[in-house]
Image (tube, rainbow, N blue to C red; front, side, top):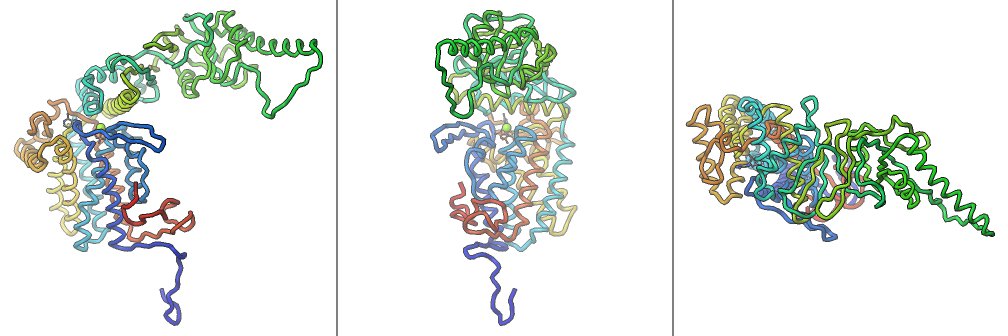
Length: 546
Ligand code: ADP
Ligand code: MG
């Protein structure tokens, strides 16, 4: 490090901040724990909701870990890494995001005392890796088969605790119906289930339609409200005359050429409708604008038309009806038309929507969400999305585990046994991992106002005493006692649990391996995390991280 004459060689730019070794580790751990602390009060069915208000005053009320973390702006690089696992968990499973983050926070918290007593980070991360692999082995072993009855329990579990009022059972049936309608080769693709929200009514008015529903009414009142045996043109091009990009002026000097000009415009517009008619379209769904005159001609031809569809709607429609999205009207042929038995404008609440049912591809369904306010519906939509995802996972993998802290306690107990067989310093890390698993039942209990220490003792003793059946014992929130969670309808897909453990371990290990943080004060250059915000106030600590 020193050059001749013992002059320190300064390689870092002035203003660069650096923290090393334990200081760096503890800073990062503190930041990661802060993220976990921010959402732990939402864990479990009795978890609280959070109200998030953004800079322009928009409000989101949610209980969903990933939604919260996406909304709040986290600055600290280690905190960002934790937020990333919530996103990964959400992408992979659609559920278990809070658990993954809370577990990651706890794994790091448990590591602190090991670091303090000079256990090297490499030893800890190795121990955590062994423990994580073992935990997944145990989970696979205690998983049970997902028959129809169990799948419904999975849906109910995903829906309880979200603000869906008392409609969990009704929505669970709906979720299963939707998942079964779209399942293809054993896979449920959530994108095949379209959600449309309409304020009004109550949650129980939510229903499923076999087909695609778009939030548009027909453009002209003289168009038919209903077209049977629909041949549908899906247009990504406008049915109007393009305005010139640059401000242009056309000077017309005599009335005759004015008339000619208008006639030509009219002919062009009429030509569009003629073209659509010639290929056999009786329904026209257009992503762009539709000129008044075109609307008039379409109505005259008895066509049904909507304009300004969302691009995603057009894509869903193409998939459902087998039609092609048209980028050039002149080249369109009859083969490009999509087909559906019925296209109909229907009143939902006090507004009109267009229902496209009896599509060529029956694996396309829509759910019309109803509810008192936007906020209620948004949260119901998130809950339904999660539920569809987990039901899909349960159907795909055919493997589920009990919830309510049962698997975490089983894993904790089995890891403690396993630790003694490993020996060495890794043993300490495996024991720390086992202890960290308890954070899930601990927090569910805490959030329900039940004494967490009692809960852990009761659960452990049930698992130890009841032999094989004990493994399903989790926290019964009604009684505060240990109970068989399979019987209590608290069931989750195996993959939600294995993924949560995998990603929590990965991020904890990644953070533990960092022993040197070098951050430039301002501006993007020289920045280890590739994060321009890093030089902001509160570097290295948790101050100003959110
Ligand atoms: P996550 O974002 O991790 O899915 P949740 O708030 O959905 O967070 O809480 C999930 C945890 O709550 C899981 O451990 C699950 O087993 C548990 N849980 C869900 N329903 C119940 C219930 N009725 N009784 C006890 N625990 C439950
Ligand atoms: Mg959940």
